[in-house]
Every structure is written in structure tokens, then in C-alpha cells.
Length: 300
Ligand code: CUA
Image (cartoon, rainbow, N blue to C red; front, top):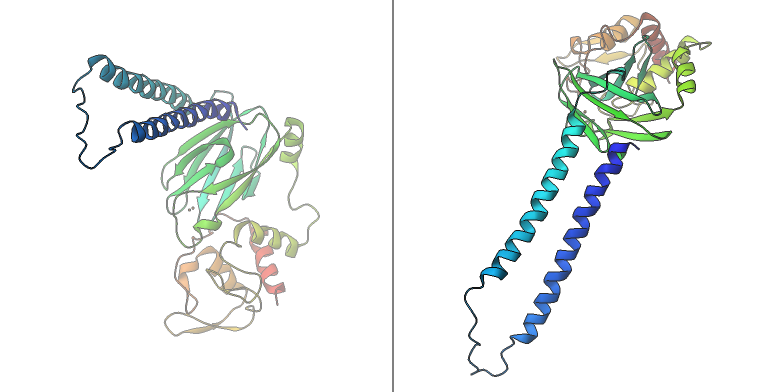
């Protein structure tokens, strides 16, 4: 949660409260008038009503006007606070949206996929861009969101005031895997965060385990580790088999084929699939790439 949320909720409660009061008032008047002005006999003449009452008409126009303008100004102050520049001492983290996962890059070079780690009670500024289409970064609990565009940086900042795990969603329709494009925000103590930042995510892992880790972070939105197809082919058992490609060609799925399909997927499209994977060229270290290939080879 953030202080911004607490302030926003006050406005929300005010709006809900005032809407409820007005609703109750209308129902009471409605019921009362139904009886008061009910026609008792078929031939009864309607009561002559007065046509104009300046004080009454002014009152029922002016009170809602004050309420509407009040909530507008209130909301405007909140919104301009939300849009204001992040504090200078904010911790900056780069965010990349990509079909269909989120990648976070910290100042020391540490990277995470679909998990954002931040310290509690510290302003965090996200510098965001997309590697393909428009995505939108949304933290529902914090009530903040911002579109993430290719070729441009947009930013978002927040200051979490308690530790915990929170959901992140993509809220801009970005294709087949949109609904699964989420991440977890983990807010931890500054000490834990500093320690975490220094850890090597691949320490003491075998190459296959490195690959599995990369796979879970980057590939599972589109690929199963079984034979079952998702958006892309299931990866189990494809190593060392003949692959049919779009266009009728067939080739052996060896290490070079796997490497090319990760780095430059549009070069060879498997038969029956659309060309929609974003290239991973430049996004994986050689260790991660080798790990991923060994992991795919280990799947049966
Ligand atoms: Cu990314 Cu929807």
C-alpha cells in the first residue's frame, strides 16, 4: 500500500457515500410523491401545481454544483500529485514489456523476469519501455498504471509503506498472451533488498537449472515444457527430431536451430504457428542461452 492509495480511498468513500445519500433521498421522495399525488378516482382532476419556485430550483441546482466541483478539485489535486515528478532520490529500475512478460533491470545490472523487488518506504521510479507492442503496467493495490510504449520511455513512481507481495497486471490488450502477462511485486526491508541485489541468481546451478530458471521467467507465457502446444509449440521432445516448417521445408532441430529460434524466431516458423515471437537477440547472456538449450534438450 502507499500513502497515495489512502488519499485516493478517501475520495472514493466520499463519492460512494454521497451517491448513496442521493439515491436514498430520491427513493424517499419518489415513494412519498407516489402516494401524495396518486389519482384516487378516474375522473379526478390533477392538482394544479405551481410552475416556478426560484429558491427551490436554485437550491437543488447549487448544492449538486458544489458537490461536483468539490469532487473535481479534490480529484484534480490527487491526480496532479500522482503525475508529479518522482522525488530526486528515487530508486530507479528499468522495466521492459515484451510479449508476454515483464523484465526488470536494476542499476547494478541484476535482472529479474516477472518479479519486481523493491525496498519498503523508499520512492521507486520505474523507467519503462516496450520491445514490441503497447503494454500497460498496472499495480491494482497501489491504484497506479501507465502505458508502456515501444521507442519511448514512460515512467511511474510509488512508495510502498508496508512489506508484502502484490500483483502486477498488463492492462493494454497486447495479443494472445495478454491475460497471462503479469508479474509479482515484492516489497522487502531495505536490508533484505540490498542483500538480495548482490546475490547471483545462477550461483551453484547446473546449466540445465539455469535454463529452467530462464524458461520459467521468460518462456512460459507461450511455451509448455511438455508436448502440449500453447501459443507456441510445446518444447518437450523436439530436440533432435525433424521439424516441419511453414513453407514445406523440414529440418533437424539441433542446437543451432534452437539457438536461432530463440534469438531470431522469424527466421524459421514451425508449421501451424504464427510469426509472433519477439526476438531474444541481445536479451540473454551466453550462459542463459546455453542453459535454455540444455533445458530444452532435457525435456522429454
Ligand atoms: Cu502486455 Cu497486455
